[in-house]
Length: 425
Ligand code: NAD
Image 1 (tube, rainbow, N blue to C red):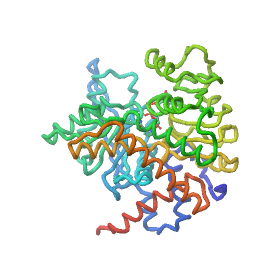
Image 2: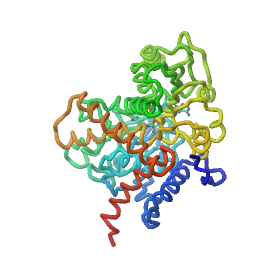
Image 3: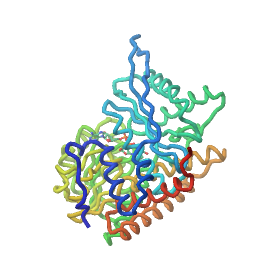
Image 4: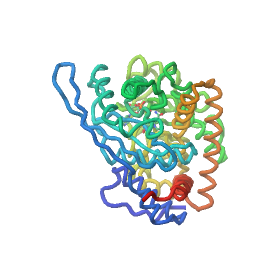
């Protein structure tokens, strides 16, 4: 059923916070959310903008702008990644923080939602510069982060090494090694087995559950993946291992395509060695716009926001979209896709395998006892499958899309906690 009531303010399609807000409005109406609770959930709980001075390798000093937004701590400490990118802006961080609140609630892990970012171009910075940037940013956030306050994690252009620096800086300030301050750490420094694979594997489980739900074949589907990083690359690999045919995949420079199916282990080996997909033998080159509109069964956008919009939604040929990235589809595109009968497994469900295993990492850090990889994967799979069913049941109950169904599940859970906690005055 189309969300025909969705009215998008002019020029807002590329503003992710407006997009997040529109979905909140729609779900709030369906579940008849109390207007006071809605007001709380429409406003980030806490935001900090910091200036981060860094001595560069050439001796000059640059000042970077960093953000940390905590959207909600109603269900537990804030949780969410840190993004390094020249394009980071406050409304993007706000949206990503809100999506973390909904995502943690959809998979029912006891966290709120937060997100951070620094405006920088990590490809033009040395390891030493990145380390100094990360340490000073961490020191600037010291009063608002903590294992019971806000637990960061990696996001685009940050990884295990960044998290190790963050953990060390926090630990130096608190005079105690505090592994549970951050997730996505290297295994051996308090990281969880399976964290690296978790988001991509969760995406693959969501594809499997979506196909089952729709009565489509469990193997042999033609899959297109946008992005070949942690989520897209590993997601494509797991889908390949499940017996599907990955016919195209991209990075920020463009895509490779072979209708007979790409050999994913070979593609990832090529990418590791060449640092670009370009030149992969036996594949034709496409641009990112062509990739999104390829004829296929399943499309997995796993790069960045704002990729499927009112400009290209009518051209999408996939029957199923499983959102590996956060916010790849605009609210206006949702309406077009729904009218065309495309099943969209939304980001706050589909890529939640990552935060689920982050929760396991935080638990293991606090227990001081580490789990086998298979235990991690089995527990994550159970949570992903249960969450998928909660979402489609809510979509049926409220006669809406799986996306708005997921928002209904999440908002009801957060509102329940807000009601029980009450308003401290
Ligand atoms: P990554 O940096 O490992 O990979 C990003 C990929 O997208 C790369 O292949 C890059 O070349 C490509 N890309 C970047 N900008 C692009 C653009 N403008 N157009 C086309 N391609 C572009 O990042 P990741 O960790 O795989 O994250 C990808 C998305 O998944 C992000 O939206 C992130 O927020 C989301 N996500 C990540 C995790 C996680 O655990 N890593 C969890 C949940 C959601």
